Length: 287
Image 1 (cartoon, rainbow, N blue to C red):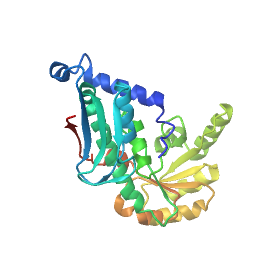
Image 2: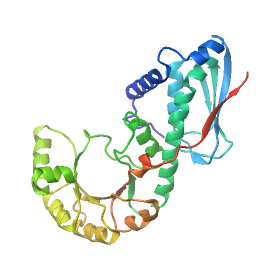
Image 3: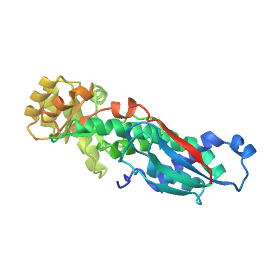
Image 4: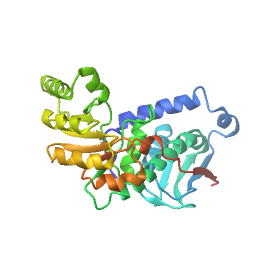
């Protein structure tokens, strides 16, 4: 798949720089003390449980950023199914470079593959409906780019990336402001004044708030922690005047019933905060 725009070369280069700095600091002394400088070797990425693989492209970028002479032969691409025992890729080059980047590659790929696998499974529950599965901002600080990317690899749709690319008026915004009507009006004025192209979404907690959000002209209305029956009524109230999104308390078991209410989107923080890492291993192959 095409790499998302937010996972730009600039962003990834900075992520890799800080991640390696955190790990290596003044030197990978285990490697420097035992591995000859010019020794060349191979290593293979072994998949140890069935999954949707993610982070392969990122692994290539990590290797190349650290040592441009490393060569990677890829057998399983991002978003493809992998089985226990499969070899995802082989990396060849200086043994020191392979060893110093091993843990960062594995940390990223294990986490990303877990998210992609869970996303793929959840998204399959929505087949036959119009509803799209979204992630949220419930991500790990400084690792958002990888987690959001993994959702996309798994077949999900990225919600707003951060606070800057969409206006979302949540319950606290509304409570601090005083009303949905006033908050949306102020948001629209702000967008116009600053010549921004931002959608305005409003979080609602009951049908009265849904009605107010519709009248306010919000672009999208979120139904927060509503029972499925109430959500179905909310969709009817909106009646296509705005996009609709279900959020809060979303589990795998309720996905299909929520989608059948007719909502356009289901957002689930669980995709990025509750997925399990996939077991992967980078093992030496002597030349």
